[in-house]
Image 1 (spheres, each protein chain N blue to C red):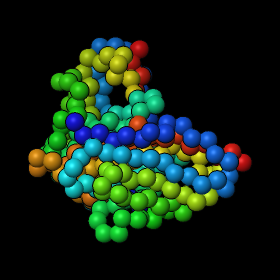
Image 2 (image 1 turned 30 degrees about the vertical axis):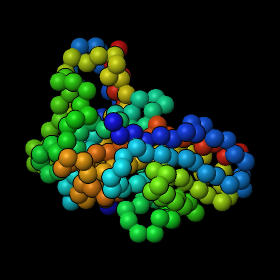
Image 3 (image 1 turned 45 degrees about the vertical axis):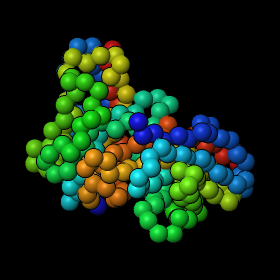
Image 4 (image 1 turned 180 degrees about the vertical axis):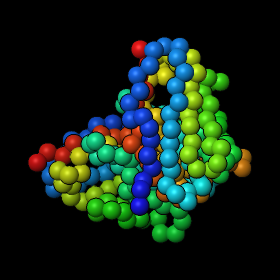
Amino acid sequence: GAGVSQTPSNKVTEKGKYVELRCDPISGHTALYWYRQSLGQGPEFLIYFQGTGAADDSGLPNDRFFAVRPEGSVSTLKIQRTERGDSAVYLCASSLSAGSYEQYFGPGTRLTVT
Amino acid sequence: AQSVSQHNHHVILSEAASLELGCNYSYGGTVNLFWYVQYPGQHLQLLLKYFSGDPLVKGIKGFEAEFIKSKFSFNLRKPSVQWSDTAEYFCAVNALMSGTYKYIFGTGTRLKVLA
């Protein structure tokens, strides 16, 4: 079946602009995760959803970052007033449920803030 | 704060050499342990996982890992590497803390296998 998809694959934006990154999880997966990966680093946890609700958003770096999953499927990560330090690959993953289940990762969105 | 350490950042091996990548974590409670791999140009994918039971787990492509609770370690091994094992390897831990699951990845080990 289809895997996790993310759009766009690449996004270049100017400092101060607003961006939205989209994630389509595997059908039937109730848990959805967002990570950020900078060069030479491992994925850094941002937020995860169990169903429609954010179960843990402790990884969001500040209030410029926000994520939603209104119908328990597709999720959007929103970044306001982008800064050059936000440049990274944003990864989305989904799993059957939170906890001990394997996470399936998407290809990521490479965000570049100029 | 909880953390995952991968001490080898870059490893270069010749084909048929044996591989061991270290992973240590810093949480004293019950953990679920994972190794993920990212081949060049591909997504992160699961190599193997440990939840409970036999501490020696086997994954895809001949990889295995051993959970040693007393050492807070989950090292990845392969007896004989192939050129196609060239990739980046990430150790990851999740644990239930204060009613929610925490997910922590290591910084990764970049493996290059010379043909």
